View 1 (spheres, one colour):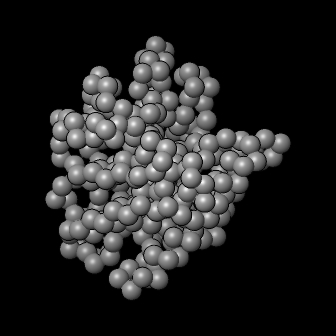
View 2 (cartoon, one colour; view 1 turned 180 degrees about the vertical axis):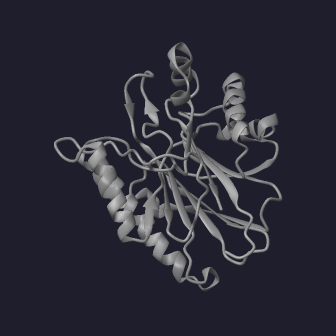
Length: 272
C-alpha cells in the first residue's frame, strides 16, 4: 500500500473485565506498555461503568465502541483519537453463528493517512468447550471469517484487497473423542491458507493458563495475505505476534497474574 505508515494493535481476553480500580490500573498499564493504536478487550463486563472506565488515565487517548448482546459480556474496541483518517465500527452478528448466547464480532475498519484502502480488524471470541456443539459452533464462526474476507475484497473501495485481520480467543481446544487442540489449529491453518489467509507466528504458543502450570494455545491472529507485519522476534520461525502476560512471569508473579488480572495473555502485532 503506497504511502502507508503502519500501525499496531493488541487483543486481550481479560476475563470478565469490570470496574475494579486496582485491576483497571493493571490492565491499563500493560496495554499502555505496548501503546497499540487499536486494541480489543474480549470479556468487557463494565458497560454500566463504561464512562468512568474510559476516563481512566491509561485509556484517555482512545475512543471506544463495544458489541451489544444479551449476555452482558461484550467485546470492547478502542482506537487512538486522530491516528487514522477514518474509522468505521460495525457489529457483526453473523459471528454469533445463529446462537444468541454467543457474542457478535467487533469489526473496526481503519483508513491510514495517505492511503485509499481500509484495513479491517475483526475482534472475535469463539465458543468455548470441547463438546460437539461448541466445536461445531467454532467451525461455523471460522467459516464466517473466510466469507467476510471474500466479501471485503469484492467491495469496489477495497480495490481487490480484503486487508482482513481476525484475532482473539479462538478457543482451539479440540473436540472430545475427536481432534485435539493441536489438530484443530492445524486444520484452522489449512483452511486459512485455502482462503488466502494465514495464522501468524507467536513468540509463545500457549496463551491461556488455569493456574500458571496448565497451559493451552487458544488465542491467535489470522490475516489475509495482502497484509504484511513486522517481525517482532527473530528465530525459526520468526514471530510477528508478541505474547505478554503470565507467560512472561514466573513463580508467584505468574500465579498472581492468572488469579488477579487474566488467565489469558495479551497479543500484540504491528502492521507494516
